[in-house]
Each structure stands twice: as C-alpha cells, then as structure tokens.
Length: 369
Image (tube, rainbow, N blue to C red):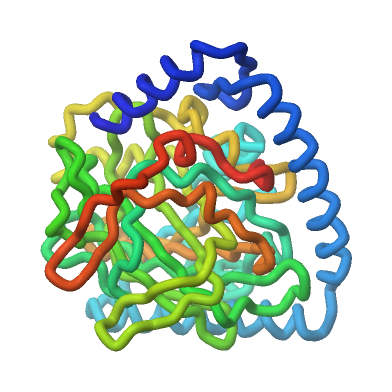
C-alpha cells in the first residue's frame, strides 16, 4: 500500500533529526514537540472556555429532541424504502481515550434486540452534545473541490451505509449552519478513488467521495458503504469541515478554510462481522485493530467517544446500516496547514497537486485527542 510507503519515507526523514515519540507510529523533533505542547495548551484553554457556554439550556434540549425525532424518522424512511418495516433490527448502545470507549462498547454492550415499544430517545439519543470532537491527521488522499452530492456510492459494492452527521459550534453550542462537510473512504478492498498513487482508483474516479452543506440544524447526510481496510490502518471514514467556501454552478466548491478534520472509527465487533461478508472477505491485506491503529489515539478523549452510533436497518447487512454522530467543532479554527490535498477535482477530471505536503498529512492539529 502506498500509504505505508509514505509513512516509511516520512519516518526515515524524521530519523535524521533529534526526535521524540508522540502518538504510536509518530516521531518528530523536540522543538516541534515543545511548540505543539504550548499550542495544545492554548487550544485547550480556548475550547474549555467555549464549552462553558454549552450548558443544558432550553435551546440545547430542543436540539436534542429534534435530533431524536429526525433520526427516528430517517430510520423509518430507510426501512420503508427497503420494504422491511416489520423486520427486527439490531442496535449498538451508547456507552459512557480510546481503550476506555472500546472496552465499554465491545466487552459490555455488544448488540441488543429492540422492539417497537423501545423509546426513540433510548435508541437515537446522543451522548456527545457540545463536546469538542478531536481533530486528527488528514491522511494522504484528500481531494479538494469534490462534487456536492449526498449519494457517493456510484457502482461500488459493499454494505450500504446511511451516514448522518450533526455539527455543533462549541463557541455558541448552536448548530454549525454555514459549513461544507467533505467525506471520503476506501472501498471494500482498500482502494481510494481520485488519486494517482499506485494501487488506488486513479484521478478519473470519484467513488465514495462527496461534499454536503449543513442544514439549519447543522446536519448532513451521505449514502455510502461501510469502508474496507488497508495496510496499517483500522477501518475509518475521513471528514473535513470547510468554513467560508463558495459553491460553484458546476456542483463543486472553492475557497474557504478547514475548521475541522477528523476520522470516524467503528466498533471492532461490527468491523469483524462486515469483513466476513463479500466483497470484504476477498481483501487479503492484514487487518489492523482499532487499538493498534496509529491514529485512533488522536480520535478519543475522556469525554468524546470516537465510535459513531449505529443501528442495522434489518436483521442482516444486505439491508444496510444507519450510522450517526454528533460532532463539536470550533468554526474559528483554521487548520489549512494540516489539510494538504493530493489532488484537485476540476472539469475534465482530477489533477495531482504539485505542492502536496507529505509532512503535513501525518500530524494532526494541536486540538487532537
């Protein structure tokens, strides 16, 4: 996998200088480490003050109630679209730093059968209101100016996923309504579209990539598939939030700045079950668990669960999975320096970025977990 080659090259370059260890799989200079520590402290202080405003106000309670009603309605609509209104379903329970959340999620909760009498607040409630979502490393396969669309599947085969994300500005605890949300993932066998790196889909492909503007409740939705895996990485979904971007008549966007970049991870039990089905089971690349992935440590804090909630729409993967998460971001942030793009999508296809910054994509902003 080219990504592992990139990591190896970066590690070799960094080994030429005096280095210290950071998160697993990361090394960087002592001066950079000190600067990051100072920056992280400043960012933490700013965000701590911002979160003081996110009390249990009437507005927050009303937003929670709307979210529960919206998710319940989405679940019902997706089941109706598939003709499985009366089928049973399975749900991953909400749970109270990564091993903490993983242990609770997998060892103590697993999946539970629910019925029509189960309160919607119990199934579709959220436990992350106004909690800052840690930023993460961008990775090497971000394509800038992708198409604004909600259905990104194209002809890719995999377990269907309806992904709903709600973004909250932690400065105000109000929905982030003027942002564009960019998402992308690899296919069932570990290949990304839109990039020219060896083993990937190529510059002319766009599968599993899309951008959506948030609505009045800060919500975006995508129809995609459950991501596959590749060497050295646990299963994950990339996200970027753009502030101040302009939508173009050709259905893409331009400008703005990156205020948030992160990666969603998934319960190990869910991953294992999906990977046992076709075409995921044709992927011969060794799997990497959540706890051994070099980037999952950035994704969690004691207050933030990096595993999104999900509910199977029926009693099998063929009917798909409804996945949702609530994410807090600081819309005043500017993490452009951490969001180097591998390519740009323009009329006629994709183009490699000649200024791609290899060193930028391996480290997250100081607001990481």
